[in-house]
Image 1 (cartoon, rainbow, N blue to C red):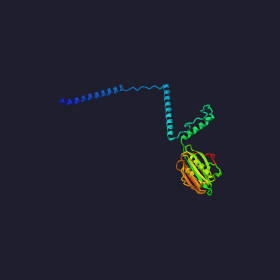
Image 2 (image 1 turned 45 degrees about the horizontal axis):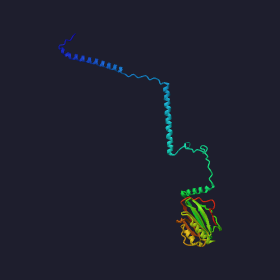
Image 3 (image 1 turned 90 degrees about the vertical axis):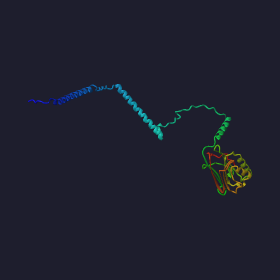
Image 4 (image 1 turned 180 degrees about the vertical axis):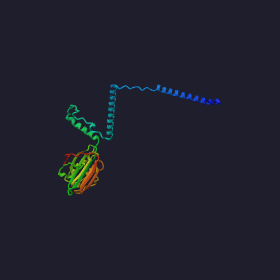
Length: 295
Protein backbone atom coordinates (compact mmCIF):
# COMPACT_ATOMS: atom_id res chain seq x y z
CA UNK A 1 0.00 0.00 0.00
CA UNK A 2 1.60 3.17 -1.02
CA UNK A 3 1.25 6.39 0.72
CA UNK A 4 0.52 9.27 -1.32
CA UNK A 5 2.23 12.36 -0.33
CA UNK A 6 0.13 15.26 -0.71
CA UNK A 7 2.88 17.74 -0.06
CA UNK A 8 6.19 16.35 -1.54
CA UNK A 9 8.22 19.47 -0.84
CA UNK A 10 8.19 18.62 2.82
CA UNK A 11 10.64 15.74 2.20
CA UNK A 12 13.29 17.90 0.56
CA UNK A 13 15.02 18.99 3.80
CA UNK A 14 15.28 15.40 5.00
CA UNK A 15 16.84 14.31 1.74
CA UNK A 16 19.39 17.10 1.87
CA UNK A 17 20.36 16.21 5.44
CA UNK A 18 20.90 12.56 4.54
CA UNK A 19 23.14 13.45 1.61
CA UNK A 20 25.25 15.76 3.75
CA UNK A 21 25.81 13.06 6.37
CA UNK A 22 26.98 10.54 3.80
CA UNK A 23 29.46 13.03 2.31
CA UNK A 24 31.09 13.87 5.70
CA UNK A 25 31.46 10.20 6.61
CA UNK A 26 33.24 9.35 3.41
CA UNK A 27 35.58 12.37 3.75
CA UNK A 28 36.70 11.60 7.29
CA UNK A 29 37.37 7.97 6.43
CA UNK A 30 39.56 8.92 3.52
CA UNK A 31 41.44 11.50 5.61
CA UNK A 32 42.08 8.98 8.39
CA UNK A 33 43.33 6.45 5.88
CA UNK A 34 45.59 9.02 4.25
CA UNK A 35 47.09 10.15 7.55
CA UNK A 36 47.76 6.59 8.60
CA UNK A 37 49.43 5.90 5.31
CA UNK A 38 51.51 9.09 5.66
CA UNK A 39 52.68 8.09 9.13
CA UNK A 40 53.70 4.71 7.87
CA UNK A 41 55.65 6.33 5.07
CA UNK A 42 57.69 8.83 7.27
CA UNK A 43 58.55 6.53 10.21
CA UNK A 44 62.37 6.73 10.88
CA UNK A 45 64.37 3.66 10.19
CA UNK A 46 66.58 2.57 13.12
CA UNK A 47 70.05 1.60 11.89
CA UNK A 48 71.40 -1.75 12.94
CA UNK A 49 74.57 -1.43 15.06
CA UNK A 50 77.45 -3.52 14.01
CA UNK A 51 79.30 -5.58 16.63
CA UNK A 52 82.55 -3.91 17.91
CA UNK A 53 85.74 -5.24 16.42
CA UNK A 54 88.71 -6.57 18.40
CA UNK A 55 90.74 -3.40 17.69
CA UNK A 56 87.99 -1.22 19.14
CA UNK A 57 87.85 -3.38 22.24
CA UNK A 58 91.61 -3.14 22.72
CA UNK A 59 91.50 0.63 22.35
CA UNK A 60 88.74 0.80 24.95
CA UNK A 61 90.84 -1.31 27.34
CA UNK A 62 93.84 1.01 26.89
CA UNK A 63 91.76 4.09 27.58
CA UNK A 64 90.31 2.48 30.70
CA UNK A 65 93.79 1.50 31.96
CA UNK A 66 95.13 5.01 31.33
CA UNK A 67 92.20 6.53 33.19
CA UNK A 68 92.81 4.27 36.19
CA UNK A 69 96.51 5.18 36.30
CA UNK A 70 95.67 8.88 36.15
CA UNK A 71 93.21 8.57 39.02
CA UNK A 72 95.78 6.61 41.07
CA UNK A 73 98.42 9.30 40.53
CA UNK A 74 96.00 12.02 41.55
CA UNK A 75 95.09 10.17 44.73
CA UNK A 76 98.79 9.74 45.60
CA UNK A 77 99.51 13.42 45.04
CA UNK A 78 96.58 14.44 47.21
CA UNK A 79 97.75 12.10 49.99
CA UNK A 80 101.31 13.49 49.88
CA UNK A 81 100.05 17.06 49.90
CA UNK A 82 97.88 16.33 52.90
CA UNK A 83 100.79 14.75 54.77
CA UNK A 84 103.00 17.76 54.05
CA UNK A 85 100.35 20.15 55.30
CA UNK A 86 99.78 18.17 58.50
CA UNK A 87 103.47 17.43 59.04
CA UNK A 88 102.99 13.67 58.88
CA UNK A 89 105.64 12.74 56.33
CA UNK A 90 106.32 9.00 56.28
CA UNK A 91 109.82 7.80 57.00
CA UNK A 92 110.27 6.24 53.58
CA UNK A 93 109.63 9.57 51.85
CA UNK A 94 111.95 11.61 54.09
CA UNK A 95 115.21 12.66 52.45
CA UNK A 96 118.17 10.58 53.50
CA UNK A 97 121.56 12.19 53.78
CA UNK A 98 124.18 10.45 51.67
CA UNK A 99 126.77 8.49 53.58
CA UNK A 100 130.47 9.02 53.22
CA UNK A 101 130.72 5.86 51.13
CA UNK A 102 128.15 7.21 48.67
CA UNK A 103 129.85 10.58 48.29
CA UNK A 104 133.58 10.03 48.51
CA UNK A 105 135.59 13.18 48.93
CA UNK A 106 138.63 13.73 46.85
CA UNK A 107 141.78 14.11 48.90
CA UNK A 108 143.64 17.25 47.98
CA UNK A 109 147.28 17.35 48.98
CA UNK A 110 148.04 20.26 51.30
CA UNK A 111 151.50 21.69 51.56
CA UNK A 112 152.80 22.00 55.14
CA UNK A 113 152.85 25.49 56.60
CA UNK A 114 156.32 26.69 57.57
CA UNK A 115 156.93 27.18 61.27
CA UNK A 116 157.69 30.86 60.71
CA UNK A 117 154.21 31.41 59.28
CA UNK A 118 152.33 29.26 61.80
CA UNK A 119 152.38 31.89 64.53
CA UNK A 120 151.17 34.63 62.18
CA UNK A 121 148.34 32.43 60.89
CA UNK A 122 147.27 31.62 64.44
CA UNK A 123 147.35 35.28 65.40
CA UNK A 124 145.26 36.28 62.39
CA UNK A 125 142.69 33.60 63.15
CA UNK A 126 142.48 34.76 66.75
CA UNK A 127 142.02 38.36 65.59
CA UNK A 128 139.22 37.32 63.24
CA UNK A 129 137.52 35.31 65.97
CA UNK A 130 137.68 38.22 68.39
CA UNK A 131 136.32 40.63 65.78
CA UNK A 132 133.16 38.56 65.43
CA UNK A 133 132.08 39.44 68.96
CA UNK A 134 131.57 37.38 72.12
CA UNK A 135 130.10 33.88 71.96
CA UNK A 136 126.32 33.71 72.04
CA UNK A 137 124.83 32.72 75.37
CA UNK A 138 125.09 33.64 79.04
CA UNK A 139 127.26 32.55 81.94
CA UNK A 140 126.35 32.51 85.63
CA UNK A 141 129.30 33.67 87.73
CA UNK A 142 129.80 33.22 91.47
CA UNK A 143 132.65 34.57 93.59
CA UNK A 144 133.00 33.30 97.18
CA UNK A 145 135.28 34.89 99.79
CA UNK A 146 135.84 34.22 103.47
CA UNK A 147 138.42 35.42 105.97
CA UNK A 148 140.64 33.13 107.98
CA UNK A 149 138.12 33.02 110.84
CA UNK A 150 135.05 32.33 108.62
CA UNK A 151 136.23 29.60 106.27
CA UNK A 152 139.44 30.85 104.63
CA UNK A 153 138.23 30.42 101.03
CA UNK A 154 138.43 32.28 97.72
CA UNK A 155 136.70 30.38 94.91
CA UNK A 156 135.32 31.23 91.48
CA UNK A 157 132.52 29.39 89.66
CA UNK A 158 131.34 29.57 86.05
CA UNK A 159 127.97 27.84 85.69
CA UNK A 160 128.65 26.02 88.99
CA UNK A 161 131.98 24.73 87.67
CA UNK A 162 134.94 25.81 89.77
CA UNK A 163 137.76 27.68 88.09
CA UNK A 164 141.11 26.05 88.90
CA UNK A 165 143.64 28.48 90.35
CA UNK A 166 146.92 28.01 92.19
CA UNK A 167 149.37 30.19 94.05
CA UNK A 168 151.93 30.51 96.80
CA UNK A 169 151.14 30.71 100.53
CA UNK A 170 147.92 28.74 100.09
CA UNK A 171 146.58 31.57 97.87
CA UNK A 172 146.50 34.00 100.77
CA UNK A 173 145.50 37.57 99.89
CA UNK A 174 143.65 38.71 96.77
CA UNK A 175 142.84 36.16 94.05
CA UNK A 176 142.09 37.67 90.63
CA UNK A 177 140.63 36.03 87.49
CA UNK A 178 140.43 37.96 84.19
CA UNK A 179 137.89 36.98 81.49
CA UNK A 180 138.12 38.12 77.88
CA UNK A 181 134.64 39.47 77.12
CA UNK A 182 135.25 39.55 73.35
CA UNK A 183 136.32 35.91 73.02
CA UNK A 184 134.64 34.30 76.03
CA UNK A 185 137.64 32.62 77.63
CA UNK A 186 139.84 33.11 80.69
CA UNK A 187 142.98 35.17 80.26
CA UNK A 188 144.67 34.79 83.64
CA UNK A 189 144.25 33.61 87.22
CA UNK A 190 146.68 35.05 89.78
CA UNK A 191 147.10 35.54 93.52
CA UNK A 192 148.55 38.56 95.32
CA UNK A 193 149.78 38.00 98.88
CA UNK A 194 149.32 41.54 100.11
CA UNK A 195 149.38 40.26 103.68
CA UNK A 196 152.83 38.65 103.45
CA UNK A 197 154.50 41.24 101.14
CA UNK A 198 152.24 44.29 100.96
CA UNK A 199 154.70 46.67 99.28
CA UNK A 200 155.59 44.46 96.33
CA UNK A 201 152.19 42.80 95.93
CA UNK A 202 150.23 46.07 95.96
CA UNK A 203 152.47 47.38 93.20
CA UNK A 204 152.10 44.21 91.14
CA UNK A 205 148.31 44.14 91.68
CA UNK A 206 147.89 47.74 90.52
CA UNK A 207 150.10 47.18 87.48
CA UNK A 208 148.23 44.08 86.35
CA UNK A 209 144.79 45.64 86.82
CA UNK A 210 145.78 48.72 84.83
CA UNK A 211 146.87 46.44 81.97
CA UNK A 212 143.45 44.81 81.67
CA UNK A 213 141.68 45.82 78.47
CA UNK A 214 138.45 47.78 78.54
CA UNK A 215 135.17 45.87 79.09
CA UNK A 216 136.94 42.70 80.23
CA UNK A 217 135.52 40.99 83.31
CA UNK A 218 137.65 40.82 86.47
CA UNK A 219 136.75 38.54 89.39
CA UNK A 220 138.32 39.32 92.78
CA UNK A 221 138.14 37.26 95.98
CA UNK A 222 140.09 37.72 99.21
CA UNK A 223 141.33 34.65 101.10
CA UNK A 224 142.36 34.61 104.76
CA UNK A 225 143.43 38.24 105.10
CA UNK A 226 145.33 41.10 103.44
CA UNK A 227 142.66 43.69 102.72
CA UNK A 228 143.89 45.71 105.67
CA UNK A 229 147.17 46.29 103.76
CA UNK A 230 145.70 47.76 100.55
CA UNK A 231 147.40 51.01 99.57
CA UNK A 232 146.08 53.93 97.54
CA UNK A 233 147.46 52.67 94.21
CA UNK A 234 145.82 49.26 94.61
CA UNK A 235 142.52 50.82 95.74
CA UNK A 236 142.51 53.10 92.71
CA UNK A 237 143.10 50.10 90.43
CA UNK A 238 140.16 48.25 92.04
CA UNK A 239 137.97 51.32 91.60
CA UNK A 240 138.80 51.14 87.89
CA UNK A 241 136.85 47.85 87.89
CA UNK A 242 133.76 49.48 89.42
CA UNK A 243 134.61 48.76 93.06
CA UNK A 244 133.17 51.14 95.66
CA UNK A 245 135.95 50.65 98.21
CA UNK A 246 137.15 53.93 99.68
CA UNK A 247 139.59 52.51 102.20
CA UNK A 248 141.17 49.37 103.53
CA UNK A 249 139.25 46.32 104.71
CA UNK A 250 139.17 45.03 108.26
CA UNK A 251 141.44 42.25 109.46
CA UNK A 252 140.38 38.90 107.93
CA UNK A 253 137.36 40.48 106.26
CA UNK A 254 136.12 38.74 103.13
CA UNK A 255 135.69 40.63 99.87
CA UNK A 256 134.15 39.51 96.54
CA UNK A 257 133.93 41.56 93.34
CA UNK A 258 132.64 40.95 89.81
CA UNK A 259 134.00 44.01 88.06
CA UNK A 260 134.18 45.43 84.56
CA UNK A 261 137.27 47.30 83.43
CA UNK A 262 136.38 50.99 83.03
CA UNK A 263 132.76 50.19 83.84
CA UNK A 264 130.37 49.56 86.69
CA UNK A 265 130.75 46.48 88.85
CA UNK A 266 128.20 43.72 88.33
CA UNK A 267 128.34 42.63 91.98
CA UNK A 268 130.34 43.52 95.11
CA UNK A 269 130.18 42.12 98.64
CA UNK A 270 132.28 42.39 101.81
CA UNK A 271 131.99 40.72 105.20
CA UNK A 272 133.26 37.70 107.14
CA UNK A 273 131.98 35.31 104.45
CA UNK A 274 130.36 36.67 101.28
CA UNK A 275 129.31 35.59 97.79
CA UNK A 276 128.87 37.83 94.75
CA UNK A 277 126.72 36.59 91.85
CA UNK A 278 126.08 37.88 88.33
CA UNK A 279 125.16 36.65 84.86
CA UNK A 280 127.49 37.54 82.02
CA UNK A 281 125.81 38.29 78.66
CA UNK A 282 128.12 35.88 76.81
CA UNK A 283 129.26 32.28 77.09
CA UNK A 284 132.52 31.47 78.89
CA UNK A 285 134.20 28.10 78.73
CA UNK A 286 135.96 27.29 82.00
CA UNK A 287 139.48 25.87 81.67
CA UNK A 288 140.39 22.35 82.71
CA UNK A 289 143.71 23.41 84.27
CA UNK A 290 145.02 26.49 86.09
CA UNK A 291 145.41 29.46 83.74
CA UNK A 292 148.67 31.35 84.13
CA UNK A 293 148.60 30.90 87.88
CA UNK A 294 151.22 33.03 89.53
CA UNK A 295 152.46 32.97 93.08
